[in-house]
Length: 151
Length: 190
Image (tube, rainbow over all chains, first blue to last red; front, side, top):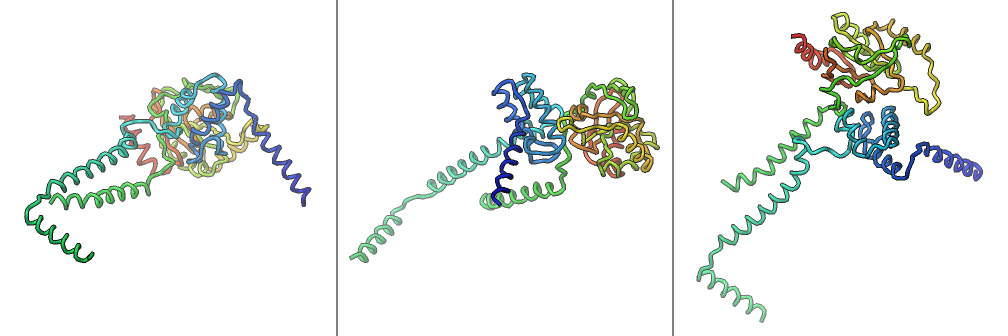
């Protein structure tokens, strides 16, 4: 049994070693490639990034990202290249357009309106109260009552 | 009066949320707005599926309204739509095939047998009807990538100047044709 386990472990080792088939000129480019493959979305297996997906198109996109990065393209240039072909869907960061502006504006708007509402209510509540001599007498009576109970 | 209106706000938010979520039930997440719509066909030079001597270029396709149908014999939905596409061809629609070879990847040491593929395609088209004027072989899926193709079947509608007007993901059937393609083609021919 132990021998089988050891053999399996060795097999695992070789499986992870094969992942390093991508060769880069610099560590910086390797980092850009890693970031891009995690940020770009697979158009076929939706909700997976292209690093994660096994779809043919994800492999093609990874290869394309690799060749673009190795050509010295910047991160933004690669993203634009992909958006040109696959649309905004391919990038996990949605662009600010008239259709998507609500994503940024709505949370801020809700907070601002909420605070405005609270402040407005407090002001209104404090304005309503007028203090008359009648209220003064009522208050004095109440104080007296409670004082007696305490004794 | 004011208080009543304020009380209605949560209800209104609830209704809006309901409408939003209800719409989501019928949305098709595969229906993507890809980047090439409104642009001209990307330039390419690719061989004919049946004759590697014949090279097709983007320039060769200009001058006609046509459908570019991305397909492969490995794709069941593509096979299912072939007979409807053949009907369309008989009605006079020009259809060009872009053969999307899924299984080929030189990184994995895949061997590619063009003769076997040709025999397979011919046998398939003999069974279902052949809608294609010709087929372009995109072995490395480079044109597919430039077009924003994510799989098969996908179909592009291209006008006389080579501008891409529609990108449809999934099969073409009578419903899709009538609602999506026919109105655009009517516009073009008028």
